[in-house]
Length: 99
Image 1 (spheres, one colour):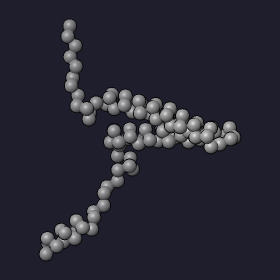
Image 2 (cartoon, rainbow, N blue to C red):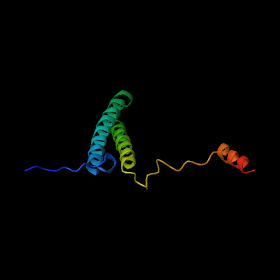
Image 3 (spheres, one colour):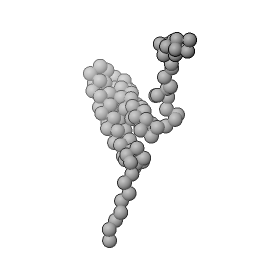
């Protein structure tokens, strides 16, 4: 028997978005934790501050991945893409055209 697969456009493929988000989150968490560990070994002597630098790096990685995932899913609660204000040049040009 032949299995039929529907062709879903990439912007509507939720499974691919989730896969990419999990991949980004895992990668950024690990890499930024390693960066925090390296910075902790390089700059700090106390084990507490070294762990804090690892935690800070991990937080940066998770936050970065969260921002990208919210953009991928077009979350309206994301504050990363506010509406662009009108520039003064555009409004002055439109006023001059009205006169």
